[in-house]
Image (cartoon, rainbow, N blue to C red; front, top):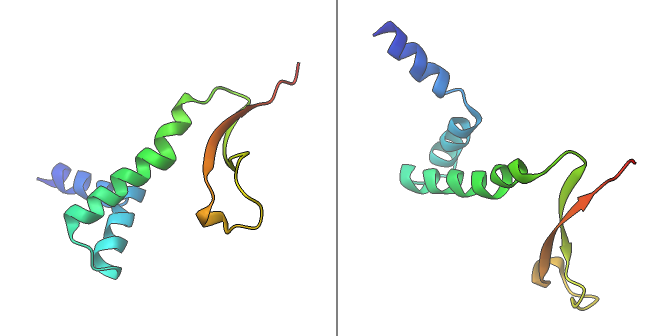
Length: 87
């Protein structure tokens, strides 16, 4: 049982679990909802970094057709991968 307890304590210290605790304790989300938020955050933020090669950066920019003077939240965006070639 000691090894099982140690594994559970280590899992509770992961960034995902800390976020789950914040969502459930401070924002009063149900555990299933908090779990879905964490999964979506991982897919949006962490999951895409795996496909980048050395020298690449992924950024979110406004679309070329976006009107000037609009709030950024109301403008359409596009995700672009920039590649830096030092050769």
